[in-house]
Length: 335
Image 1 (cartoon, rainbow, N blue to C red):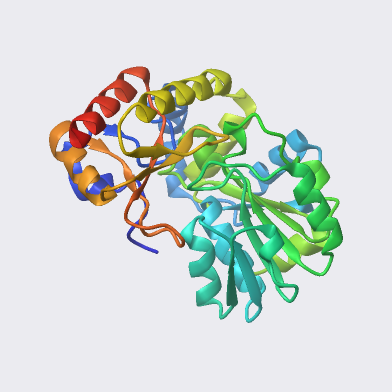
Image 2 (image 1 turned 120 degrees about the vertical axis):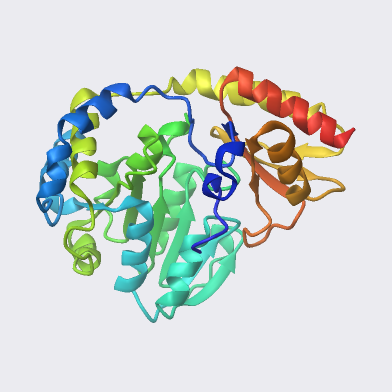
């Protein structure tokens, strides 16, 4: 899906002053990264490593796995399309509602798609199972023990677990080291989300070596640019953390409590910093326009997620001041 994702600031220009539509905290201090990239701007005059090998080595060292367990990609989205291509003409089960690119990548690569509301509904003949954990757009986490049991009981299925938001929950998730022991598990990771650098596009796949080799052979050379590689190495070496997750989740709970006080809006539970809301009677598209025009606030109209409708919208927690203004705007819209 080229158009229709959140973070569509490019459509609204300077009108937007607060962005709740992207699952990224927009106020992080990335000044040291910016200074580092400016000092290494000459990298644009040379081809980068074709496979981002120096970044792969750092990731392998950090997570105590071998380099053949890791493949760096141009964001998690490239990883999704590589996996779908490596398993073309197969059967994919997608646990919905979820990120649209699983379905789009599967469709392009001639997969038969089964839309499943839970792991318990996945057909036995599914070859691939796509699961976002924490899930976008709901923010919920599938229990690790449930996942582990499913993986071990379905050795003929490959389970793709998108952990792009793994650094934004306190729930227990698969570590890279333990997941790499399973031949049928493929994990997706996002430095884009972790460090709030969506413009650089940086992610990686981790998996059992033979499984990853099947996927990585479809990767084109130089898919990750030189500045993105340099940013990844800088962030890993500095151990730069831009958000205190415990405080961030407390802010999320406070924001949800404020929104729940507004009549005819259902605020759904979450295990991370973003969550779904649903109008009992209303359209998310109308609220989106109202907030843009009146407050310069952008939210995510969630109507185009498979399984949702025009009453759903998604919010990602921002600063206390921004959250307060958002609640004020939504309250006024409902009054």
